[in-house]
Amino acid sequence: MNKMTIRDLDVKGKKVLMRVDFNVPVKDGVVGDDTRITAALPSINYVLENGGSLILMSHCGRPKGEKNMEFTLKPAADRLAELVDAKVTLAPDVIGPEVKTLVDAIQPGEIVVLENVRFYKEEEGKGCTPEEQDAFAKELASYGDVYVSDAFGTAHRAHASMAVVTKYIDQCAAGFLLEKEIEYLGKTLEAPEKPFVAIIGGAKISGKIDVVTNLMDKCDAILIGGGMAYTFYKAMGKDIGGSLVEEDKIELAGEILKQAEGKGVKLMLPVDNIVADAFSADANTKTVGDSIEDGWMALDIGPETIKAYCAEVAGAKTVVWNGPMGCFEMAPFANGTFSVCEAVANSDSISIIGGGDSVSAVKKSGVADKMSHVSTGGGASLEFMEGKQLPGIVALTDKA
Ligand SMILES: Nc1ncnc2c1ncn2[C@@H]1O[C@H](COP(=O)(O)OP(=O)(O)O)[C@@H](O)[C@H]1O
Ligand SMILES: O=C(OP(=O)(O)O)[C@H](O)COP(=O)(O)O
Figure (cartoon, rainbow, N blue to C red):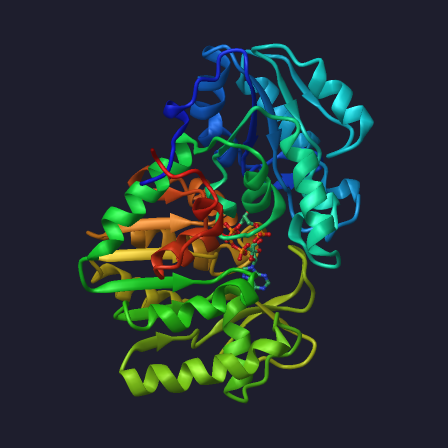
């Protein structure tokens, strides 16, 4: 990587403003999977051990510019406090006089975690002017002498704390996690061994469906599952009942299907599904084919689909997987995800799993150590794989 790294910084006595990705699953105020927090520890400990103090910034979820405490970083800050040998204080806000006072008083070896940066619309830059976003970023920049980004999972977002704050700090370096992810993904995906199979699922349809277009030129097969599948169903004129769909992506899904046919790419969709009459672990369920009646929603791929997807994976030499095959957090809808996990783990392939929830699923299934690389970024690893420049990396200082 031709960017400055944390090793190039002198952090002694300095305030280090570090962007991390603590967008972790939280249930009842407790972190469910702390992979993204532990993954940032090498950079965090490096600063503390070398005499610096840390001001950490992250988002959690999508509060859309509102101070909605459902998305507080408190659970993440609490978990961090258990993992480091340092005083950790959660700031009551992201910017403002109270935060300034806390940051001014910070001592070497201490950590202040700012509240969720997405409590401000200026973070994403939607619904505000570029000048307002700049002012927000400038205030964030005023907290640090140097800047480190270790938020690989968010590197594809050109947000204030990732790609604007860097205009106002001279030295902006990559942390150990960011560096490791880029090196691994770059090396592996430059010339992937074939057959190359991509598995795309999950719920963030608008963020990932565009990636499918570009994957067609690289992959031999693309397996679509999870909430992503039903926008494709809709494009094919199939009934989807109350399943997840993004109306404004139906047209694109239709184009992708046509392109795949034209290019001879194997684009696979579920042939059967587990449907439920409510979004709940206690719902009534049944297995149906590729048509979903009103009053039912598809929450997992069915047994025939599992068989077909596992067979495809078994013959692969490279597998990239982002997005669960179903709502694995609820036991009745976990079979698809866990079965595909097993198949990837048992295959003779280089396997790269990315995405907050996908990683959580792989860990839950107990086979994470059999994967070649568990990436902290889902959307970020997919965009990197497409060959796109990630704004959170572009913004860092070039190596001298
Ligand atoms: N059929 C489905 N309908 C609704 N949500 C789904 C479905 N399949 C999977 N999901 C949900 O998708 C979420 C993960 O999606 P996403 O954020 O895109 O993945 P990742 O975090 O791995 O990038 C999970 O919480 C899961 O419950
Ligand atoms: O969880 C994340 O992305 P991922 O689900 O694609 O891995 C990152 O924290 C980015 O979050 P965002 O997709 O709300 O910008």
